[in-house]
Amino acid sequence: MFAIAAEEIRHLGGEAFPADAYERPAGNAARFLFTVRDPIGVVVAIAPFNFPLNLLSHKVAPALAAGDTVVAKPTSNAPFTALRLAHHLEAAGVPPGAFNVVVGPGDSVGNALVEHPRTRLVTFTGSTAIGARIAETAGRRTKRVLLEMGGMDPLLVLDDADLPRAVASAARGAFTYSGQVCTATKRILVQSGIADRFAEALAGHARTLRVGPALDERTEVGPVIDRSALERLEDMVRDARERSAVVRTGGQRASDRPDGFYFEPTVLDHVPVDARVLREEPFGPMAPIVRFASIDEGIRIANATPYGLQAAVYSSHIASAFSIAKRIRAGSVHLNDPTILRWDALPFGGVKESGVGREGVRWAMQEMTEVKLISVNYAGSGA
Image 1 (cartoon, one colour):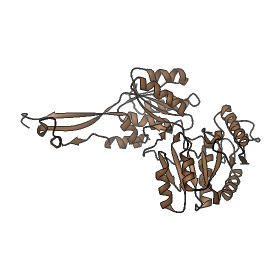
Image 2 (cartoon, rainbow, N blue to C red):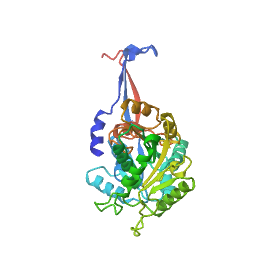
Image 3 (cartoon, helix red, strand yellow):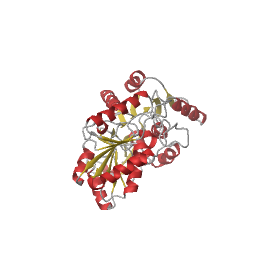
């Protein structure tokens, strides 16, 4: 991230404009117009637990490259990575005061940073509920926000999809990092003609996954973050069952792992659209399957949430998949690839309640700078 920011800042500049192309104001024939980008000032970077170095670096590296100073507020669930980053940046020669870390609860420390009169931009990754509160507070003080929030990322599998490939992608999207990713596959929408075979294959795949400590290289599904995450997953399974969903596999805590917060890789089938697991981010190893008949119905279900972060479409006909991608309301749509893809140097963010603005180094630096127009009148200057 820091290497990319060091390269991209070389290409982030202003523009020159032909002043004589504009009729007004008078005298443009003797003017030169151009823009520059100034640092926005003090950036508040609020980062989540799931990628405590990468997601924080997505905020810090562009800000420092653009000439801003940063106050980082890591989540209380994972504060030490940010403190270690501060140590390394100091050792690398970053000037004192350019990067700062304050730890503590969001309700006190985070709010104080957002409200402080000298902070000018808040960049946040986390839940939509907290992001909305940050936006409200920042808006009252005319501060800029860059928000990467929740998602209910759909994976659409059409009847003509390559079944093994689609199953592997669904498993990767739902179970990688135990599903604790904003871009995780959280809704699997499968066309009726392939749905039975898909659900059986995905459940079979899930049963083979090894659950265990994340530091064990043999582990394929690690723990969730804490006890409340386990309880939320149990509640979602219970709610889905009560609404007629079928548990194909999993659906409970891992009984052979009583020493931690482990939940079995879970495949739910015939999930009704009003189930909690289709309306709220599970942030766990959960793969709910929704069946649809027509492509129009699949797109309608895909768009029927307040969120729009990422989506994926599996089809053997790329023209059909591209047509569907254009109709899906999301910041990114991946064709024949999983929802969890992200390129550090490319634009990333959501629409609707999934976000405001775009990360990705160049795009983040644009958000973190102010455009200033400068005009030079050289009439009579001897130029």
